[in-house]
Length: 460
Image 1 (spheres, one colour):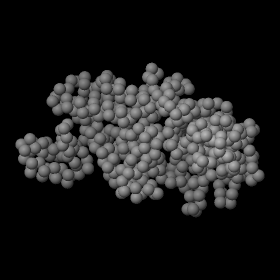
Image 2: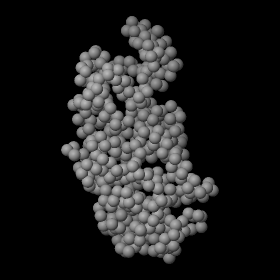
Image 3: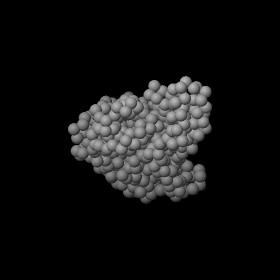
Image 4: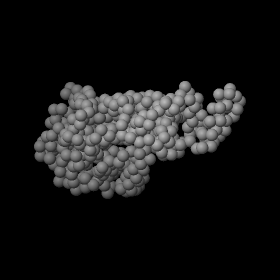
């Protein structure tokens, strides 16, 4: 690859030139859902960041091997299954299916492999045994196994906390815990009455794996003990990813992961939407409100992945307009029926923006500035066949990353006729007629907006 791509590495806290382990190929692991509830819109902020990252690497020519796990056994899934008095499999199958449907709705490219934790317990047992044999883990009286963090000098490096001066007073069995408690964590949890029928035999007795060992075992099984990129949300940094690094490096003695990439939190901005906080704001619920998958995608990827998003219905409405703008120009270009493979100079800037730590706001800004320019040229019929072909090719390439073209967003002929009639009324300064036509267009479910670029019309 001739292109200089830089990503921010959470481990080193700086941007680094991306150099894959194997030239021309990228091995990528992304933390998938815990199948105890429906994934919410904050989760999909992370999944969409990962989708854009993957699509960008594919666009510039890399062959991607992408693994995303499904966590179907941990504290949360067991508790939920017990509370609902159903089997673990019944619970996790239900929510895994919903997750896959949501991925499809948002046109998120599926991973090459979706390993399921309960199908890889043997791999986890092998890894735990290795850690015990190397004195990085120990067995307790009840048959649980814990990782000893004092045996790994670099523990805490990902989180950037000084654990040396903190007292390691006791072990922690919970999957998730405060970063103020850098304690030995569970690799294997001995069977308890509340686990019911959930348990596997091991050299240390019946029990189940801890959450952290699951991702290490599955990522290494499918990507090897040294791979390129590991992604997740910032909430995964500690304890999950910190613990992954410790147990993986101590088990295999290899670098494990070259680049750690994490997306920031999503906050609900306005009061109306924040009422759902504590439940979930899901993809289907937003679609039911009338927001298209493309507008949801735009709302979640238009901010840089390392900045917090203030998510609101206002933002979704603005995203809907932006998506319509792209589709409107694309449809207009397609009517000219020109094809080609050359690209405008702006495309180079577009790719350069994404090469700089996946700067989606800058890339989208370049795309929209270009769209504005070509729109004006089309308005005055100052557009060559070559420019038409280049414009189509640019938008289609951008869509390989953002996936915002709806392919069914054309304005119906009766609406177009009304918009044209209204434009004529405005030119004649017949404001009363113009307002009546606007109202009629609104009644048909479309919105007319006047701007310096001309009249815009989009679905309400």
